[in-house]
Image 1 (spheres, rainbow, N blue to C red):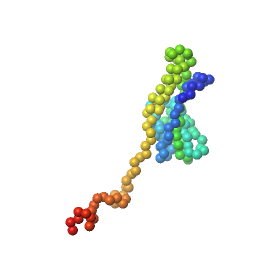
Image 2 (tube, helix red, strand yellow):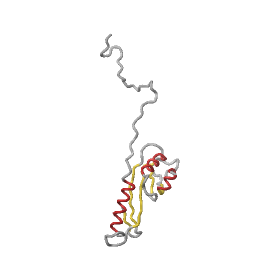
Image 3 (cartoon, rainbow, N blue to C red):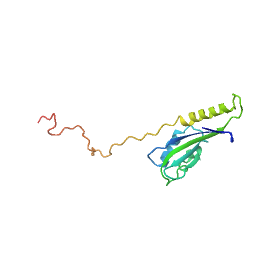
Length: 152
């Protein structure tokens, strides 16, 4: 959180790690689903591996076209920086429109609308082989000749 007295804005932000599998489009889609109820003016900055420069767009544009944040051919996405700027109160008293209530409101609003709904990415469980004849070296419990319990 940054309270910029010069511009009269309160900037709240957080960094969210991107999923570590899938295309950049899928990684961006995962984030957009997480932010279904977030404000449309939220800024989403995508950070990439290596020295590739980040990209930044408003959430409303990313919802409409996720590829605007991560164009094809880019290196994999590493993380997302989410930030929102709101007007800061300038009055001195503890009433509405005052500095402290505006900062507290900005932080609580950002947390409740943006941070709280985000669930950490969890890798998918490994899949079994598609070939039913391939047991992958597993012992399926069938006893062969000479196995304990064989009555021959």
